[in-house]
Length: 399
Ligand SMILES: *Cc1c(COP(=O)(O)O)cnc(C)c1O
Image 1 (cartoon, rainbow, N blue to C red):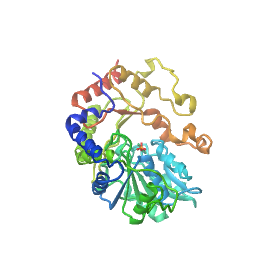
Image 2: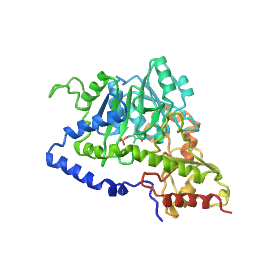
Image 3: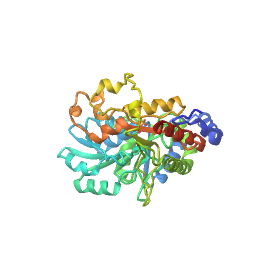
Image 4: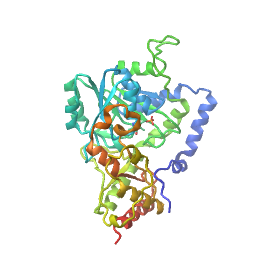
């Protein structure tokens, strides 16, 4: 049996027809930029996130850039964020000319450690950019109250967390701005790139909207240098079909995560992900990420020295042999997993000119050498899940 890490094909039996007619509706209308589909999507997405405004844009990365620019964050400013994230989180900060300042993550939930933020603040700090990584919401009550006290802005990276909630409230509705991605593998995926920015502030919303179309409040009148970053009509039409299904898909992801929790419990050397499901906190499970620690009998296993990029780049990362061996052995059994993320952002070659290489983020670095994302998507069957778990069991319990 082959189990893919992710599949969009299986959705087609549910919504293929609807997607087909939605795309043709746009093509027949000849309206490819803006129009009703985009307007309707922005309205429905704002409702789904309990915010006053949602502005479509080209990608989650652009959503972050637009949010930072709209908050006047640029050269000379520092933004506190996590190094255990997709590269775009920090890339957006660098691209507006500001400096990402990395703070280590909590080893339990893999999210920005709020206790460490205090030490990273100085007079240049303008904002905190938390990531609701893998769909797990960060404690927004504490984060927002701390940021307000220090006069800092909060930009939420919700790229992996459409459908997540903290204290009953949608992510992207509690900070100053929320940034979403509709990249195909996210909880709400388009058929290409797409993104959205959410906010309750009318002035910010207006500024973001203008920045996304060349800083142009009126046709051919440009008040600042902006971007060409729109959610196109075909993507909006696809998202209009999918958005109503998001709550159902999140429930299915939650069920899969619960089943993994049950089936994997007690396996030696494997640590299960933090499950924040109490008190109106909703984890949307974009990824189900285990930590591979000491696998018993691993010493007997021959080591593989196949040149992984990270060994060349940053030899100071903790060794990832147990995890890499498990990943490879699972592949042989048809179980395809992914490593989110093998190299922390602060050790990426792109940042080698900066001083980040000299900072040490122990939890982040250890996670990068231990994490493994198991297959999870709403249509994953129980048989497929059992195959994943039985394969892991056979590998870690062999005598
Ligand atoms: C996917 C992702 C982004 C970027 O979104 P794109 O739509 O691919 O540009 C940003 N941050 C995180 C945490 C992501 O997972």
